[in-house]
Length: 380
Image (cartoon, rainbow, N blue to C red; front, top):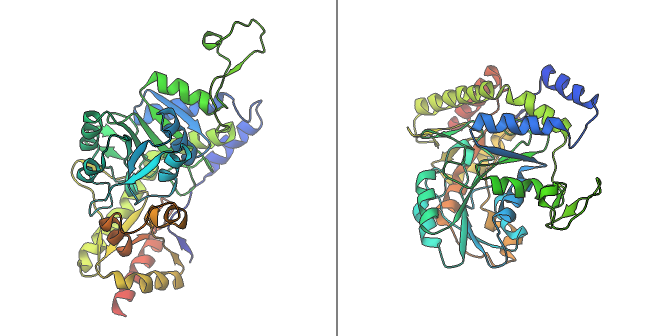
């Protein structure tokens, strides 16, 4: 019984939808992408959505469209995948790390301490699917004339107070990933949501080499029907219609996926409540939060037990994971000046955490097996 920490759930309807597009006239740059974007924006309640080739591409374009450039400082958390910080470096900006709360989320009070005259923006991460304190972060950003990009790659289906993550009520842009372990998948893919028409238009152009075919935007007069202009140094970050078709089909089951994730989470929570907090503490949501549980993370009371626990689960073919090594500990960042203990709370958090299996296709008997193995480990 091999149990990963996460995986996709593809059904026959998904396959049929993709097959239908593969038999059509358009495999890319066709109508299915726009249908997917419109459906996605309607679900998260944003005005606009721009589908791209990956969550990393979405982060890169978001930083570029908000004019991150050389010497620009952008504040983010080290408790995330490397792409969150990398998107700042792609645009020659400087990453400034803010420490976290005990639940793994960026701490707004720490953000305030990091702001300088060079700070241009902040990228909070909705870690695990748990929303960051957006209201507080938004207030800080507005008071200091900073942009806010939500890294919502963990948080499709999550809610914060009266807001859906992705509606950009508290931000300029929100970014999602459709990697196979995420809430829905397009194989690889991502999307950016916004309520700004000007940002939307720029993103559309940047994902296709910075080129426009819109005559009303031409900078020189031309009447040839084939004419087009490149206005910016953009990229080929397009999503294919094949991927968009899979995304559309997956979106129809998003509520089911999130509901199942929350059912699994509740069983974990009941289990850890039953065994007490001497072994591990699960990270829980608060009243104002609705966690969509991309991950289920626990913090071990004794960090010295983590490796033996991890290896024990691996021997039992439970392929858990650690999310994440603090970004600035990666050799690339160390070699570029990020040395020493930058965020002590994040480092302590990292030393204690482990991600247990969490995905909608996880069967009840598999979950019971995971729980039984945890009980066995406690007896060792």
